[in-house]
Image 1: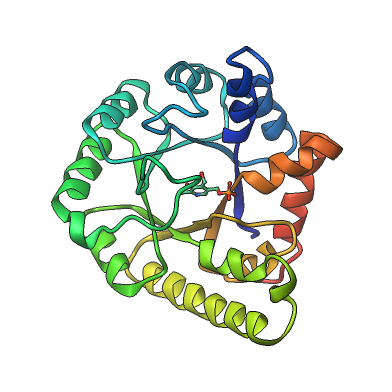
Image 2: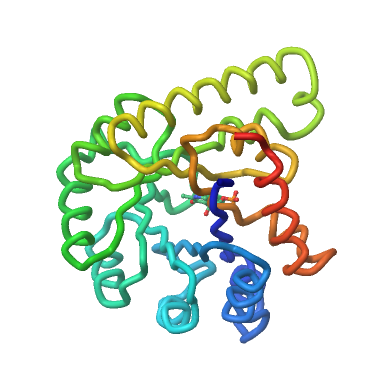
Length: 251
Ligand code: PXP
């Protein structure tokens, strides 16, 4: 079975917040994505509220019928919002105030007790807990140790190696192949540790195939590339094309 696709609709809210107005509607974006075949909707409620707002989470919780995954930092403020609004899943991420986007995986090893407490609070509220981490054996062991149910492997490094001129041949291609191996090994190790395996960050129609072929990865969270393409072809088609890119890879 092909991996599931959760569409990250943060950047629909980015456009809305550019004018602090009501359009484009992220509720419409969620509904269109679901109708196009998405298995879930992902949003990141950032501390600085640069795109998704608290009220969006409340509205999405009422409207999303598939699966609502909310990415957040493991802070008291965010955990309280999660416990109150009850998304299906929370993905704990590392967050730095000045970053353009999430820069890498959560360091579970060095934040063990904080992440463990956060995971427990979420699980007590009936929320599925995923940790966004680098494809690294020790971080996976720590994720298991804090009681996470899923890891989402950060594909940022792979994505970086597949974009632009450096990607197609020579050293870039070789390094991308090595990074695929690293993700593959991490996915295997995580699954054998009893964790469900997701992946995401920087994935595109062009580069998702190599990862979709890894059988242990059962979920992708993809945003920027889908929302970018939707400007030209519409969200319905953009989501459909990503589902096709994921599905056509042989497992
Ligand atoms: N997964 C996580 C944990 C993220 O933080 C993000 C970005 O918000 C994504 C997936 C999606 O990344 P992109 O927008 O590059 O597809």
